[in-house]
Length: 163
Image (cartoon, rainbow, N blue to C red; front, side, top):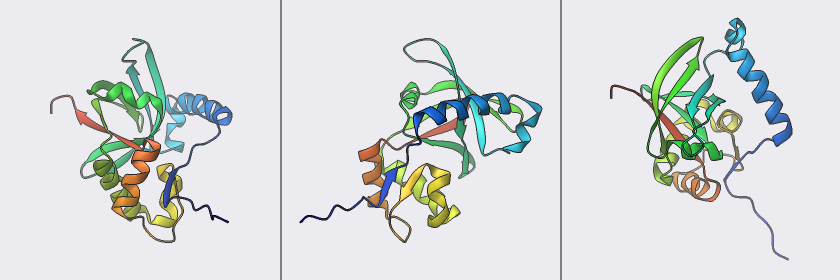
């Protein structure tokens, strides 16, 4: 009898129904004076859909890394940033006008995830990064790159418009 084993790292996708409600509440909270309740780890990203041309607004987790900001995602909206696109990131009550660029090369994605897992500790990083770590140690670079290929784990990096 074959034993099924889980990969070292896999995407942790929350159920869609509650997620829709939570996102709606977060949009209101992040644009209110009560935004301080969530600090600067969650921001509201506003952008224009690449194909639809619609104005879109979604709450995102934001991480400081190497002097810049990143968002980790496997959501479909990430494709809006394949070639870079302007965004407004409302973080900590301030609007930042940035360019967002999709990084989906598995090795680059693994590097970012690895740095953040090391910062937060592998036992706490999963929840903060939206992944499930199924090993009792920090995942290797190859395990993280495999998760990026399998699950579409990606990184949105933000740059100043002037750079």
